[in-house]
Length: 400
Image (cartoon, rainbow, N blue to C red; front, side, top):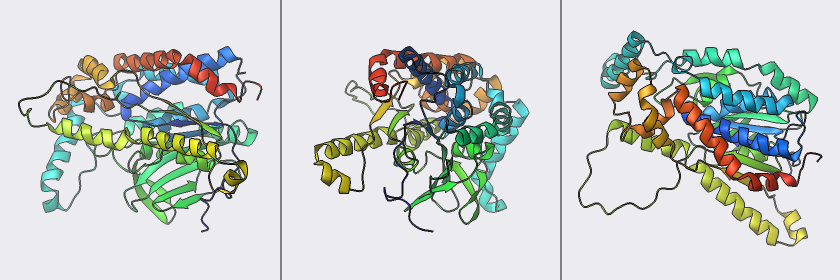
């Protein structure tokens, strides 16, 4: 297969990409941000029939938001309103099994196989059963509408990032207009394929927490997990799919401020604290770095003479990055008590909870009170940057 990663093989820049990173329940924050952006765009006069995001890229639970938006982009204001409502009312039993016996059986089996799997020659699949999520996605998403939006020109492309446990590659599956070609870079592939529920389950399969999902890769069937793993350049799919600019919404914690000097060694970290630290590295740290790299490249290209710039295999990607202004971990700590009791007892056994385990809890606390708090935080953050958002979209404008 030829290498399609050169800019000459990429489609011409067209429109703004929406890049949605994820992180389990934390992803509710994106729905609020998008709601705020929608209010700003409507105030600018954007018609409901003109999709402001012709390229939509999703990673992890952000892929679910991406697919939901893409399937309803022909009436984007309504899509953004219903997305907020869906997140604000989502419950844990719609994402994973919460029955006491089911959780106990799954937890004991996972812990037992972790300890004695070498003896039985079996591997633990996952801590939680996300079969309800498959049912929820099947009910809410209509993938034929994605194809219809692409055929009508309302949507240029939808992409879903995954990570292959089988090959070790980071693979972006995409559904797009005919001129968009697959790409290959070392360890990073783009494969054209109709997007379905199984792609979203794979992209959002938190490692160890939810089971890997089989998909058909380039060389046959493979097992795939969360798309945030090995995703060093979350803006790359937007470039390959022909975006002219990008709005990227992450769910990272704000940069911590320096605390008081510690004189005593703190308690040894719990399993939940170590897992939360690993999760942060997997899910939350790459967007800032990639956006900074894009900004440096944009400034370098702007300083070059036009003829030199035209000869280089690069093009600018103006990027608006939106991240939480307040700690999502702190929000999770306040709402941990709303987790169903059976799930709370199981997860507390590994240190998850309202104290030092709140960071890990923030990924799995699928309860309406917590999720609605994140939606409201996202909307407030977006409206607080109303002028920046309006200026970013002013160049394309409602009539552009």
